[in-house]
Length: 363
Ligand SMILES: *[C@@H]1O[C@H](CO)[C@@H](O)[C@H](O)[C@H]1NC(C)=O
Ligand SMILES: *[C@@H]1O[C@H](CO)[C@@H](O)[C@H](O)[C@H]1NC(C)=O
Image 1: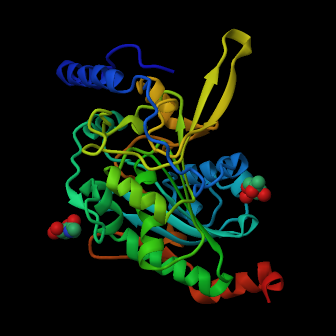
Image 2 (image 1 turned 180 degrees about the horizontal axis):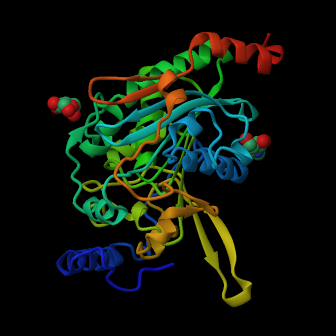
Image 3 (image 1 turned 45 degrees about the horizontal axis):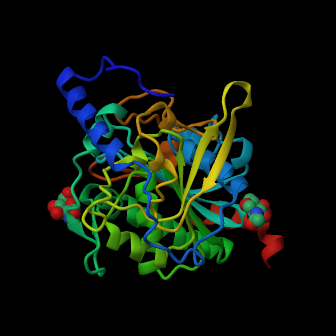
């Protein structure tokens, strides 16, 4: 679906500025005639459709605001393809309005880490702000790699990172050395990318896989190049006219200076007309900025941002960082002075679960 006119929630002036940028983007997003750069695609991962349909459900579940249901994996989105997930830690950074969980999916033989997208203010304001994001911090240890400070800090400079690293450590202790799959939608996708990279660079984790949905750009071309060498097993799913993967803008005349996606994009879109419409999943080239994928169309839809594979990627309602907690949640939760909460299964519960559920397979 495409936004037809100025919605009520935006002032006229803001809408006007947005319109100008959409026009600029339309120019910069046109099909390129010359394919100058041939990229070595062979080190990149293969796309697995059924894995994508599973991971999108994890990326959806992490939006749930009832923390007890989420922590006990009984929420309305905690069934279907994610049933039986052993959640190990649920992290709620109330101060920065972030939410994330770590657990073990036995059917995938993997630790799954999921990050929620933005829940502050409105999605429209958040998207509008994306136009102006600067490449304003150097990624540590990677010369010339610039990223956006806000996305970087959301993962690196909040209660989220220490919570995740701790939970991954505990999961490995009790379940063995599983693969790690990191996922997230929207800003949660940006955080998933920083998390996957962090696990590879700073914890020397092996077998890290990242799959994001509707993720914005996070850094420049130098960053994208380091990223894809270090976390080659990455898929960035984009949906039809979803506006967010087009942001912050990429200007093809200045490919080294502006934001640049890392590979590999998989673009979901419909082709055909009338009753002959069918959905295509296009596996894009290794450049990160394949002109024949989402960049071949205008990014002008918020609706396409909020549903991937028919799964809703937002809270039940938009509100400013609401959390719902009852006495059970309080029993497991630890709150710091700023109100940030970590729900953790302690080691005795984990050990018990390991022995009853998958102990037999592993010992
Ligand atoms: C794709 O992922 C599913 C779910 O993890 C797995 O069962 C299947 O074997 C994978 N397919 C390939 C070709 O790797
Ligand atoms: C991390 O956050 C603190 C306080 O919120 C801030 O003073 C500091 O500059 C931040 N560091 C980075 C690298 O963003």
